[in-house]
Amino acid sequence: MAVRITIVCENTVGPSLPLIGEHGFSAFIETETGNYLFDTGQGYSIIHNAQCLKKDLASIKGIFLSHGHYDHTGGLPGVLKLKKKVNVYAHPDIFSEKHALVKANGKDEQKYIGMKFKQAYYEKRGAEFVFNTSFSEVAKGIYLTGEVPRTTNFEKGDPRLIVNNDGKLFPDPLLDDQSLILKTTHGFTLLVGCAHSGLINILQHVQDCFKNEKINTVIGGTHLGFLKRDQLDQTISQLKRYDLKTIGASHCTGLEAAAVLFQAFEDKFFFASAGTSVVID
Image 1 (cartoon, rainbow, N blue to C red):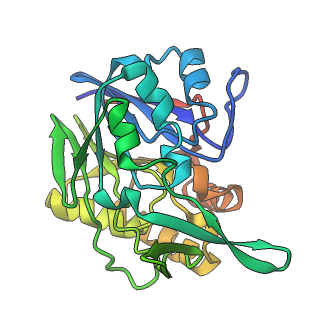
Image 2: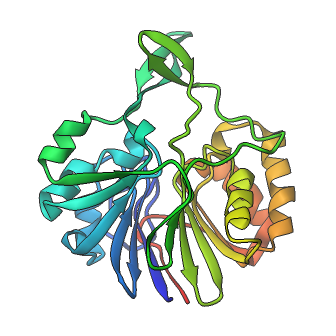
């Protein structure tokens, strides 16, 4: 199966394009069986950018949400206004009350970073949620990872991210973090929203699900920009074992971590800014 992946929302914008950048991520996916949307950004740029890129959001057959943070789900109401009725594939924990600890006035303060609205709000506007917790095929050659086992000893996650459970705060396990897998003629392409499960954990999970078939391409946010350098170094060391053909870093990878990835992978690396379009067969 041949696919085209176009980055619609991202922190940065490709050259010579009249697009809007925002802290968020969304990718428009064109396949032989239909068009899909992976994440929706914050909501400020998705409609404008899709129009500029000539990607018809009303044509999509489904929306995949990588997790319940605002910078991946904020554009959902706008897309629903165009599409009216569509399946939205996600983990049920996307509606958990997610917060982040941020520095303000010299101390940590809580900032709400979850879904903008309750489930019923989206459903009234046409969202038909299809919840999954395990690996599943959602269309021909298109798969969701479901919950990703945390097996590495160095991918610790982001300690700033917490969840409010009945008035009590806990580290957010981010069980809702899942990625999208596209089966192509020459292997698999993996789309990650933020890779909160750990990029190596995700890659290993995908290989386990497909009995070690080849993963050629990884595109999306890796969250390496928010974590310690030793985790970045160990991630790069492990990535080399997978012999990826292409790595398209984006969003929460961060510019410094992206620069280190470029040094490690050279011509295999590209930065997936808004407007980037990749054809994979």
